[in-house]
Length: 527
Image 1 (cartoon, one colour):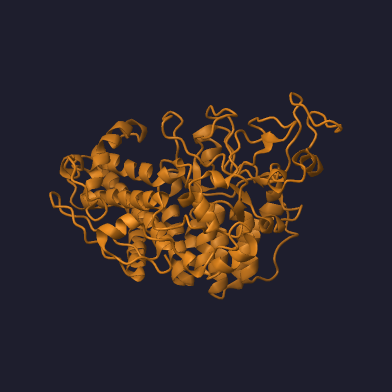
Image 2 (cartoon, helix red, strand yellow; image 1 turned 180 degrees about the vertical axis):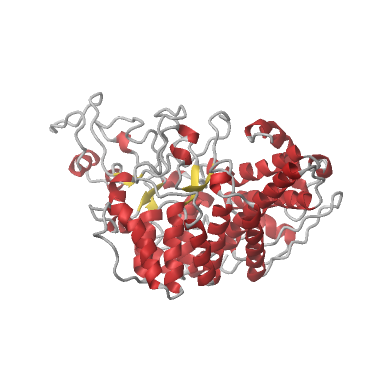
């Protein structure tokens, strides 16, 4: 079998295959006919590889790389969110006028997700009558089909959660003329396809222990997506069953807190630790395709006199997002996640000059009073050393320097603890509080290092708070709050950057105007 890295050049050539998606890309292009590419295992693999390149591309864009973290009760805008395009993270987090049908960033996401679906459709079609030669080839084409089904379900789940009203990309026969008709599908129909895709994918995909790494779909990923989709539909028993399948998979283990988001050992080391179910993989050998998440939560600490910009301090700051005051209120000092997953203080560097009148030495923690003195009480500057999450940070493992604004660490999409948190909610809603407590207390035992902080009872708010502590800033909060009908209420209560702006219609995003003009469908209400 061809290695994913070895087919990079082939995947680039295959970019023109996106014309096959019919309802999304309507420009006439000179293309390689799909039949000439998808008649070999190498060609099928190359098309599948491109799915990952396209779907992960959101994390390569400065304007949208942490869109899934935006707009919840766990974040507020960083001091320099104002530097990004109105239609990007600024609009997404603050629900400002930039969150509109005219947003180029929203259109890019929409178009790229449908390009990924188009490639999934090609692989699924090719797998149906692929001329296999022997059991080995049969197993390979079945795995590619499973990957395509899982990734199509993942992308459709992203789309239907964000927009509610979306078209299904029906493949056109090769040689067909591009079409303009793309009716919006009923939400139930979209979820029916997602569930069907995942049910088949689970049968076809290997367990992670048998797969090629964290960047390849496995039974664990398909089951996690199945659980998420069933939670959206209120199918608590089915969601709980899917979570239990992950927990008993045998491929995963809960890891020490300070190991999960580490980089020691590189792609084959901590980045592939046994807690990871699926990550978007970035290759430092491909310097033209870095990801842009690594600096988004880093405040502008190096503007404060005496604090040097170093990899240990956070490297180049970007200050686009910051944990909200509500998020910090959820942690007590005994919770090990508070220290392990966050940067709580910055320190003086001996190479830098400190303010006159302050006796601060190398390695001393910078007190807020010092920052306030320097900032002369200015509210924005006083936030330059506010605590933040380090879940997305990157050190010099892949050659990053303190001045680089990008990196090559993988972006974690799902990890094992997610199945415990989601499974606890599913069991709780299905009336099995005993099992719900077992699952959520397993996560709390790890967080505290003992059993002294276990929950004895459970309610929705306790589950939401534990989800925030365990999975905060990993991109799952927005969909959860929307599912529970709490998005608007919680943002108004806890996101100071968005409280005044968010309205009821913001529980779904605007359909891009470019698509409306081509397809002639109706815009989502409120836009």
